[in-house]
Image (tube, rainbow, N blue to C red; front, side, top):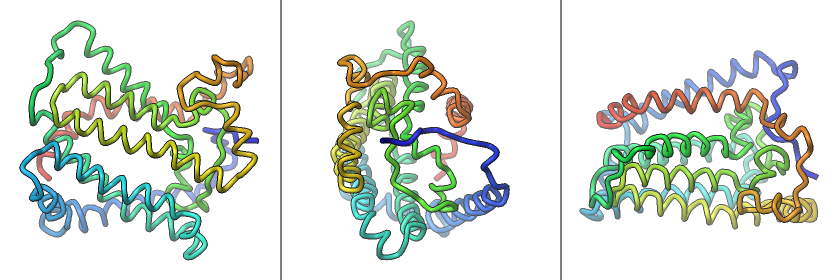
Length: 287
């Protein structure tokens, strides 16, 4: 019924498509910097200052930023079918990214800059084993990325974007891996940082992704009908739930569904992001 996720066949790739992707990525990043990030030309600083003017509480501002992003992101996802019929799949994807990316950037930058603000609820960074637990949990969370994230050519609208009905790989563990990964990431970072701002950010992000569980299933049911109901019957939202109760039968070579190039890239990027934390924090402070 469903599609095989995280498939990347080198022989089917076109150099022209990836050159086009590189050009689009460079153009988007340049435009994002000029129109939004650079304080001298962009609107990002004014946006964050306007939201910060609503309340003197960093926790409230953090929640408002997440709410704005969530409303736009989930709202545009909900209207995807109608929007694609109106302006086409590629144009709608470009519009979706053009609005979502700046809001996501501002929300992330605000979190990085204010993650230790507010009340210090606990302090366990010196406790043996906590760093390792947080590191491992964060690492695992990125392996639970939704498989559509791997389709970079579709994400950039080089290939025509599609709404996929994935069934293999991480989808056997949970039908909503991005939600599970976000919960793990939030709990790990909340444990490590221990501040009320981080707790507020975690609450907001988890709430957004829990809404996404309902909204995602609703959209897939509307698009695929009976095919989605069949897939739903043999998968679960709760990790390993369908496996434990026998609805999901793992093939003997299940591990091969993870020995694929996208997961290798996720491993390298996740390790790179860990070592790049100091540079991310320094850059965020300058914005």
